[in-house]
Length: 445
Image (cartoon, rainbow, N blue to C red):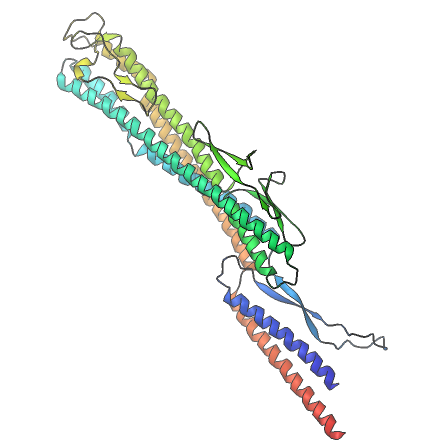
C-alpha cells in the first residue's frame, strides 16, 4: 500500500512539476511576439497488469500525455485573411493621399484659373504691355505647375513601386524562412522539445506573409504547411522545403505586374496589392492631367496661329510639348500674343482673335476638368478611408479573438502557478505519509 502511495504521489509530483514549468514558460513569454500559450495535457496512468478482480479500481497515478499549444487554426486563418484586407486598404489609402498631395499642393487648378483671368483682363486693352506681360507670365506659371504636378506624380509612383518591391522582397525572405521551418518540422517528432516553438515560428511567418500578399494554406499532419499565392488554386509559394521567388515588372503606365518563378501571378490583397491599386489610380490621374495640359495647348495654340500679334506678325504657338511633363512656354514676349485677327495691322485694338482664344479655352474647360480631377481624387481618398477603417476594425476584432484564445493571460497564469504549486506540495505530503506508513510497517515487523 505504501509503495502504491509513493508511486501515485511521485507521478502526481512529476505532473505538477511539468505544469509549473509550462506555466513559467507562459509567464516568461507573455510579451513574446507570436508566442502561443501552452498547457499540460494529463491523463490517468493505466495499471501495468490486468487485475484479477473485474471491479478493481485503477490506482496507478497520472502521466503527462503532452504539451498542448492553445492555437485555433480557424481564428489564425481569420487573422491572416482580415489582416491582408486591412493591409491592402491601408496601403491604398496612403498611396492615394500621396497622389492627392502631388496634385493639390502644386496649385494646378489655381494656375489654370489665373491664366484664364489674365486673358480676360487683356480684353480690356489688348495693346497694354503690362497686361500682355501678365498674361504671358501666367502662361509660364501654368506650364511650370503642370511640370511640377507631373513630376510630383512621378515621384509618388516611384515611391509606391519602391515600397511594393520592398514588400515583394520581404515575401521572398519570409517564404524562404518558412521553407526552412518546414524542413525542421518534417525532421522533428511530436515529442520533440522544440516542436511547439517551430509551430509558433510557422504561424508567425504565415501572418507576416499575409500582410504583404494574400495566401491560402494547407497543413500536413507533421505540422508542415503548403502556401499558395492567392486562392486554393493559386501557384505554390512554399511547398515543403522549397520557396518560389516572387518578382515585379513595371508596365508602361507605371503599374506593376507580378511573376512567381517566372510565371504570371495575381495578387489581390495585402499591402503589395494596395500599393499597386494606388499605382493604377495614379496612372489614371496622370493621364487626366496630361489631357488637361494637352487641351490647353491645343486651344491656345490653335487660336494663336489663326491671328496676328501686336507687331502685325503671324501668331506663333504659345506652348510647346505633348503632355503635362513636357509643357513649356514658347513665346518670349507679351507682344507675341495674337490678339488680333489675321490681316490686322500692328498695334491693332481688334481683340476678336483673343475672343476666339478665350472661347476655345472655355469650350475645352480645363478649370472644370481640373476641378473634377481634384474632386475625384478627394472622393476616392474619403471613400477608401471609410473602407480601410472598417476593415481595420474587423481585423482588430479577429486579433482580439485569437489573443483571447491563444494569448497569455497573466492573471490566469498566476492562478495556475498557485494551483500547481499546491498540487506539487500535496503530492510531496502524500509521499511523506507513505514513507511514514512504510516505516511503521517495518517497525512492526
